[in-house]
Image (tube, rainbow, N blue to C red; front, side, top):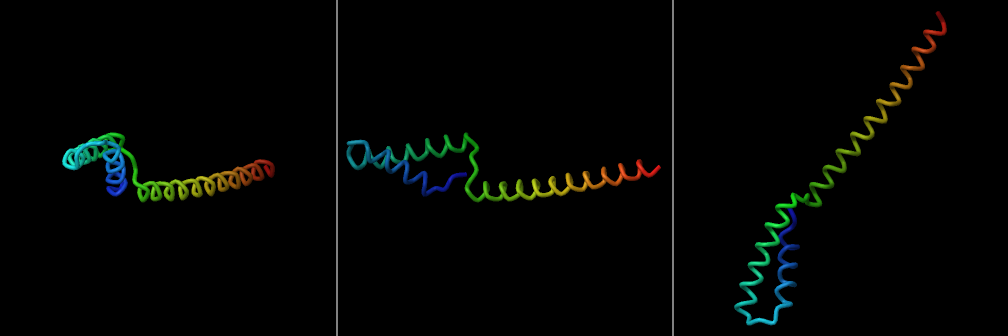
Length: 86
């Protein structure tokens, strides 16, 4: 989920664009905030923290894949040398 401060700031900015009475502006700000929260929730966005966790996990997986690829290459070389010695 997105940070509430971002959504509040965005809804405040949008409501400030309206040249309405203060009461109507507050009501509109609240409605805009609700609409934005729902829209962003429907998008199923990640927070920065969730993104960082996923990026770190992906980095570890990539490192493990590279290590396994190196191991496979080494094992293939050993098999080739064993096949040649026969």
